[in-house]
Length: 241
Image (cartoon, rainbow, N blue to C red; front, side):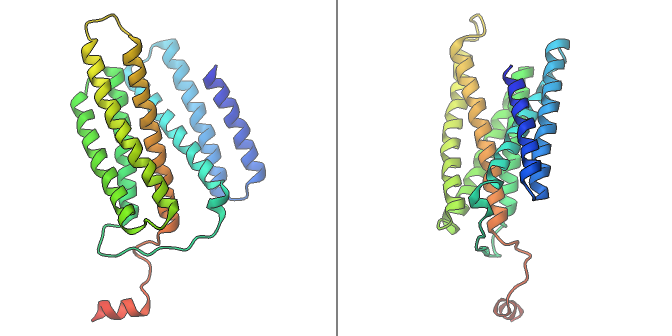
C-alpha cells in the first residue's frame, strides 16, 4: 500500500513538473523518476508472487536507491537556491578535479549499497562489503577534506559536506552494530526485533549517505568551473614561461 501511494504521488509530481517546468532536463528527471518507480513496483510484485531469485531482489533494492536519488535531485533543482545565479569557482589545476572526486565518491557509495543488498539477500559476501566500507570511507573523507580545505566559504558545498561526514560516522557505527547483533543472535529464532531495527537503520542511513553524495555532486558541477576551461592571459603566460 505504501509503494502504491508513492507511485501515485510520483505520477502527480511528473504531471505537475510537465505543466509548470520549462527546463527540459528537469522534465526528463521527473519522468525518469516515474519510470523508475513503475519498474520498482513491477519487480517488487513479481518477486512476491513468483519468489524470484536473489539477483532480482538485489536489482529491486538498487532501483529503490536510484529512485530516492532522483527524487532528491528533483528537490534540489526545483529549489529557489538552485535557480539563482552563482559565482563560479576555479580550482587549482595541481589537484585532482573535485568533479572527479565527487563522481568517484558517489559511485563507491552506490557500489557499497549493491554489495549490502547482495549480502542481505544471498547471505554471503561479507568480506566484499567490509572492503567496500573501507573504500567508501576513504573516498568520502577525501571528498570532505577537499571541500573543507578549499571551499569552506561556499555554504552550498560546506553544509552538505558537514552532513555527509556526520552520516558516515553513524553508518560505520551501525554497520559494526549490525554485524555484532547478528553474531550474538545467530542461534536464536529469526527475525529478532533488535537485529531487524539495526539493519534497517543501517540501510536507511546508507540511502541518506548516497542521496547526500548525489546532491553534493550536483552542487560541485554547478559551482566549480571545469578544469579544462580556457586559462586567462596571465595564467597562459605563466604556464608558457
